[in-house]
Length: 317
Image 1 (tube, rainbow, N blue to C red):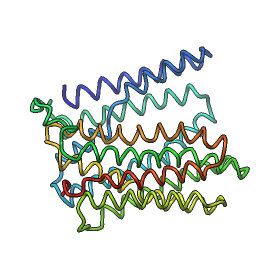
Image 2 (cartoon, rainbow, N blue to C red):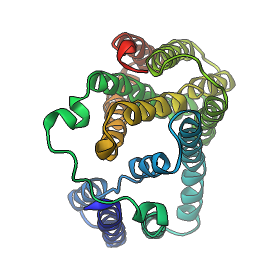
Image 3 (cartoon, one colour):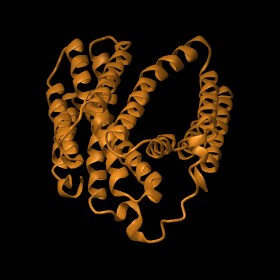
Image 4 (spheres, rainbow, N blue to C red):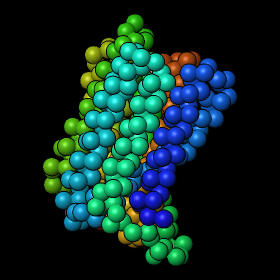
């Protein structure tokens, strides 16, 4: 179908879903209706991140230039993660939740159309080259193992996003949760900038191993921090490893998967991280209710270290 058509269909679908959900919220619809609408919105989310990495790959040379482009892309995402919730929270506070949903629908539609109408996106023609199972991303040696490692990275991300509000509430400062999450995102943005500007001699496999182990060790350390300020600093340090880990995952997808399947490969990277984050968030919520944030943080830190051991270092250049 190609980027232009597929992204447009999904973007319009999600925007319509958000608008319908806004109407349902305004009408005080039953919870089941709101949940169903939320599922539709999630399913129709256009894979803009994966599409952007494919565009970057078409505009840059493989190597340092592409690494810097992917790093810049990751930093932009982290800045949006910081700014987006703050803006939408302000809008909802000043107006109503339906207004916030409608505004989100407009942003989704404008952003999607902005990509699909660009020259670089229009140049991405439908792929017709993936005809055998061996050419698909999951058929590439080592790539499924990389995805498992990224699930571990996503678990750390998911627990950090749950732990920040929990720590803020435990210290009687719920409003601080936003600043803690911003600290985590800021650390990731800084890490992405540094990763893009430093020339690494290590292979992609070695970098992914070191980054994942580093993230696991820091997560374990942060789990032992009790103060609000100290926890925030710990989240900055933890975030330093997030964007570089994700960028390395995208670089692996770019390096080991045939060009005709890179969009699918980038989507698999997104899926692995999001799956880990979703599972860990659910588990962390249950654990925090019965213990504190130290337990889930320590567990996902250990999980990240364990999953790092399966990085296929010899297969990744």
